[in-house]
Image 1 (cartoon, one colour):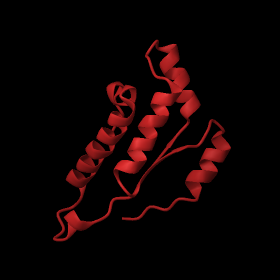
Image 2 (image 1 turned 90 degrees about the vertical axis):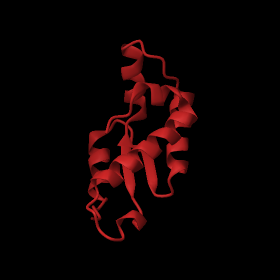
Image 3 (image 1 turned 90 degrees about the horizontal axis):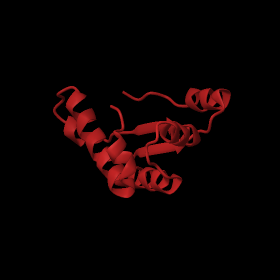
Length: 105
C-alpha cells in the first residue's frame, strides 16, 4: 500500500487516516480464521525521511519537515503496534536494522 501525497501533506490527520486505511487493508488480506478479527496487527515502516523530503522538493510538491513529523507521530499513535521509523540514508545501517526484525505470522 502506498502513502498518497494528500495524506502526507495533511500531517496529523493524514497520518491517522493512513494508519486506519492500512489496518483495514491488512485485515482484508488476513485468512478467515474464527478469531482473526481479534488479532493484534504489528506494522513496522522504515523510511529515510530526508530522502523523502528531497524527492518531494525535487518534484515541486509541498511537504515540510514539520508536516512529515506530524504525519509520522499521528501514524504511530493511531494504532498501538504501528511504528514508522526514520532509518536515515545509510543503506548498511538500514539493512542492519531490518536484519534484526523478525516476521510474525
